[in-house]
Amino acid sequence: MGRRTLALLAVGAALGLALPAAAQAEKFCVQKPKCVAAGGTAHPSIGTALAAASLTGGRDRIELGPHVFDDGPWTVPLGNPVVIVGAGKNKTTLRPATPAPFQTVLTVNDAETRVEKLAVDVDDGAGSTGILASGVVRNVRVASDANVNQTGVFLYTDSRIERSEIAMRGSDPNTVGLQMGAPGSLAREVKVKAPVGVIGGSQDTPRIVRSSIAATTVGVLVSSGSLKLDTVLVRAVGGGDGVRLVVNGFDDHSLVLKNATVVAAQNGGTGVQAIATGLLPPFACPTITVTLRSSIVHGFATALERTALDTGCEGTTTADLDIAWSALKKGSRQESGPGTIKIGRGVTAANPRFVRAKKGNYRLRPNSKLIDRGQPGKPKPGESKKDLDGRKRLIDGDGKRGARRDIGAYEFKPKKAKKKGKKR
Image (cartoon, rainbow, N blue to C red; front, side, top):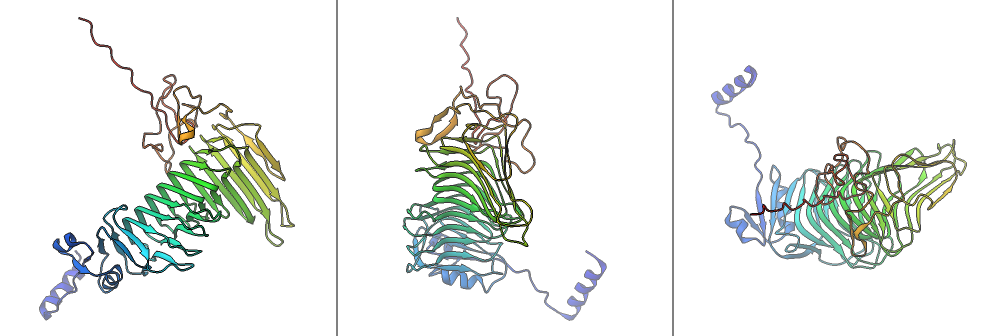
């Protein structure tokens, strides 16, 4: 403590001035008696708890009991951070009072807010969204059965969703599970099921890590900026496409897949697409690149597609695919326009030999030729050190040349040989 601070304290004490106390966070309880018994303040609804929190200092905590709250929608305003905690995603559910088009069930505008342990039912309105979030969404399930265009979760800048489920079960081909086009957004350990699994891409590259996506239209769609997939399973269902970078614009755009498994549940569709179209002058032509490392592309009618179209933009529109240490059908491709499909070291056409693909098990069998055939070296800073099952990434799976990553989202771990008992 400096001399100036001590002097101010002394003056305050001498004059009998009361120094302001630090703002204390409070706890508000909705349909949860145990929370009240532990010292929280009871409130009849989420809306009244949010209103009370807006009048206090600190990041207040709002605890929700095992109940269906159907008087939404709700909004957490900017500058009013809270922690909203339910009793579990199978116990606490948020619903709007009345279905309406373009309605968001829960809007979080403050980046310091957390939402945890609850479920959100999206209403039947066209254009509706489950959660539109800044901050952190964790241990949450968002679901809808509506056959209209909707979005499960939309992430703002630097926000993230973790250990959660998004199930948009309707048939509208434009419905999106997760939208994360904002800079710095992150999806980690998330299960997504929707016609369009994820729409993403930004100049400050968003990331999807250790997650699984099932989609009927396209698993991952990037239309602007860049996106990185790290240890991700993308499953195209009913003839849908795997991952697609499609740009109608300018500048550089990229989609990077590391330790990804991109598979078609039924034969059809395209595994990996890079499609670029330039704008009219004075805009520069775009350059787009899809990069695959230690990844599998399997089961599609066309494994790779690369298309570049010039429309009079300045320069040359270019679409590139850069592939190494991966598994795919080398001859299954389509190309047009400027650019290249670069097939680097370690690319194989070997059958991955999944454990049980028809049942959705895309782990590798002991006789798979993809074991210990991924990109050499340890995961770099910022890359996942675990596979989709939570195993450490580097395991000596074939027992021949030491630990090395496998190709795909799952790392094969051999069973330990049983020790024989001593004979008497």
